[in-house]
Length: 359
View: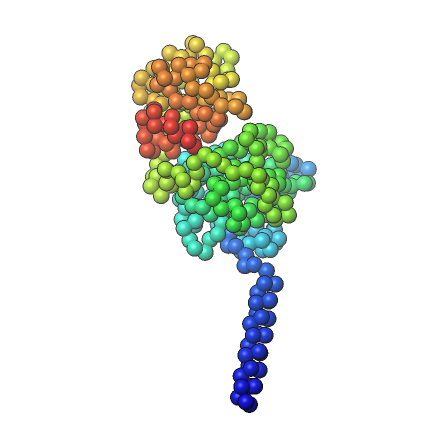
């Protein structure tokens, strides 16, 4: 009986310890995600001469470590480390920069100790880089682009909160599988859909199809999900792409001549995106030049310079007859990105048109 009493007391004590451990585990905060910040330059790393310089400043001046050190609040939302991939104002980025960045993102995404990736970038071309990564990086882990419209030295600088939001989203499980994202001005935007629509306001980035959601005080609120093919569902893979074909853009406008088209057609390009007004309209006087470019083996892609809407095939121009491709809802700069990526696989116009519908 004495042994039985001691056993019951031991069992009761063990049960109490187990219950206490479970309670403590339930009360303990969840483990933080591991987020890598890749810096490329831009306004978010810019500096002005004074605090009132919100539009006049030098971009790509502040290094990655200084950005992280200046925002200690990041340590509350994720375990953060940073890398300086390059430090370039985004309007000066090249195809080689895109390849370098995407390959580094792909490599990091394969690491088990990386839960999400944030990329600081200049606003001028962040939408193009975001779309390129959307098309080529195979991962379900969150990839979040972030930028700012004002340098960190300015009054009401937006970079710090944008970066905090980006890290918060990148470390969130509910951001997985949604493609490449952009966090700006409290919004979570699709890297495919988003565009810069003004050059002096923090609310510069919007999509005609609407934001995916919002991030407020470190919490995500989702309202829609992208349906176009991206990341894990893409047929393109940055790990197999070593170079990008040359694709150029010629804009349409009143009084347009064929000068640009004729010159570009002779420059060795693989595709030419025509950014026309309205429904991707093409002035009658330049149609022969575009037809010749196509006859010479250059793919012609008809897009629109209009911010919203999409180009309808065989409206305005007989695309089937001319063997042209339409860019769907992609603006010229994003149509160029998709064309470069697609041409690494095929130059068949029927296949290219399928790709423009699906991506």
